Length: 299
Image 1 (cartoon, rainbow, N blue to C red):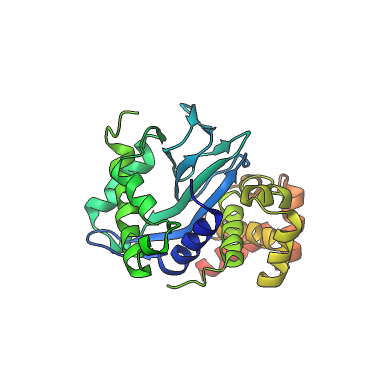
Image 2 (cartoon, rainbow, N blue to C red):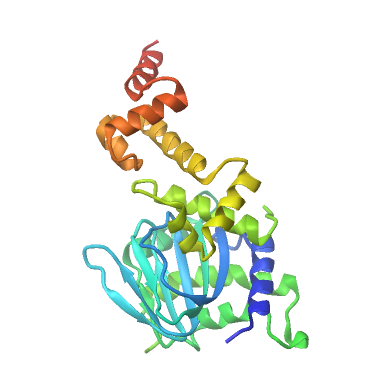
């Protein structure tokens, strides 16, 4: 187990200095590093990227909601991986001490071999590996954590240099047989807001509430609401509506998807609600917006 202060110090350092991870053959973009000393249940959700997690203590379970999904028990030194687009949930009655990192490979700046490894990982990864305390991936992850004894701590440069090796190792760890059993500020408020916005963008195809996102981030609804108004200059609901409209406009411009399907894919629930919101935001209903695009293409 690690102290809350050591956890906070580690995450601040990584979110400040280890978001772009270049390396031989592969470059990774990290959306956030995180740690929670008492992770309970979070909402059923999905990500557009990978999210790898390491349980340091406590017990719980991880479930994937797909055709061949299953429930996996979680305990100390279990590592699990949420793949892009896979709906899942983490649950714990008593709370787990957990580390996590959300990432994706930067394909234009990575080799074909490394790109294919992570594409294959998104299709075929083992979701959960228990008893992994001495696995290289687990050892690398623990090496990033600031220890309680100051004279044991790595410099920022030495600690951050281990991050690319850790992320690269996930392709081996979750695919292979495995064990038996540029710069961003790094302020916690910035990271929380970034995670909230990413959660919204990744789950636009269904209803989303302030309470749900706050529960996912383990903060109060009031705190999350303040983050939006103070840092984004718009409310939670305004941002959510703007993202839904933005996604709908993309579908109208670039696809032949039926308006009813677009309404469902962007979480409006009905064509009437979608048409009214879209017209209020853009000044024209979806059908006319699409017709103007097609007229422009013909000209």
